[in-house]
Length: 344
Image (cartoon, rainbow, N blue to C red; front, top):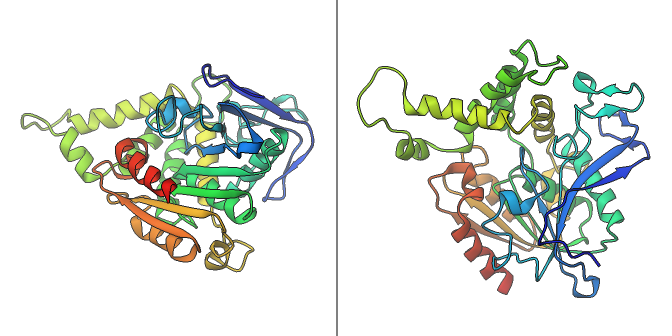
């Protein structure tokens, strides 16, 4: 019996066997950071698996505190909640700054290409470790939703309910182009592959500034970054972009960011499965697909596509001025539509 929701603790699962990747490369071993909340009661079938987004972590109470926690929609008193740090991230799982046991040095630029499918295979190892046979609800937004969609296709009978938010079946050329621009910013920093504490920091700041323009929306900046007086320089919007870059640099690693944007690019549930439509038709879970009106990174037509080809899918669209980041902000709307869906 695991009952630890009152105190978040990062657990590290050490997988000592070789881990084969989609790229053909092999990681000699694997570490997976994860958090759990609540009590695992197999007879109640109460597992809720939460998937974090690009720079998120395994502590879902930290970054989705409007949905998960005591008295909220997903209360650990009612669910056994699992959230795993994705392979390639710097919050407890094997990533570019991890030590390669073969060389006894950090992987850095030699860290292999990771796909969303590789990430899900890591989740499967954790699922087996936790002795979970069935997941009542899977939920995630953005890259988190990509993991959820991949897993729901890979193991159609595992999930009873899935709630993919602001995500897609295959990452778009538009999204790949935005990610490539961010990686170009990282590569423009000549210190990116150096082995010192501030390596790649300026590149990461620039990459995050590019990303913010796709995470938010014209309306977001229009409402919050207008200058009160006319000026020719030192605009609020400029300061905001720099602030966001510095904010991420203080909590994330440049090479992990590079790795995870490449993983996002790889997302395609239809790869080697006769295409996306055929893959989505394999999903058997009761599904609520959620989109956001102002999302320019994962536009609503991508959620409409998911709902069209998943057999038991409903579609709900959130009104928001926050763009893609609405899935991290619009807790009131999310709570209402999800709670209504779960009552059906």
